[in-house]
Length: 148
Image (cartoon, rainbow, N blue to C red; front, side, top):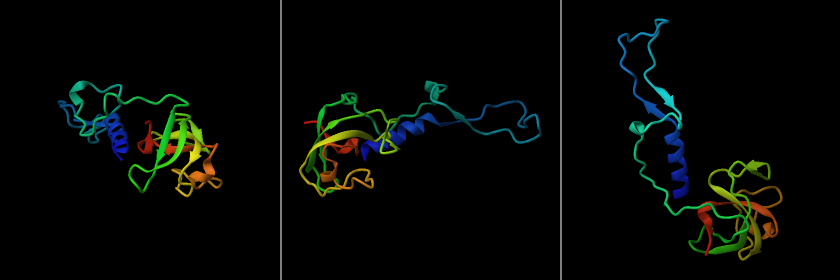
């Protein structure tokens, strides 16, 4: 959940309201009201418009390497390991099963399923449970992956 808040905060910072500039004429040249706000893209933003984020990403956050071993955690029981896997793709723009991975997930190759009837992150017509995903790549949310 914290990762999702961070992602939303990052997206919010890319589009930010900028106060209108004070001009001598409040009317635009075509006799319509002048715009009172504008969209500022990330690369146009300067430090005076930056607002502190209430959610911070830890400095030690790093994207895992491909083929790094990991454990997939349960959706329902805190700390329960449902499978052993290895990291596949970490690029959020890559696709798996016809859908983009997205900012909140990685692809993983399931090696061993411990709780075979545990639901996968994004079910497909062929794979709905972790037991069906053994030796296959599936998407799994970042915050439910352990690297211990």
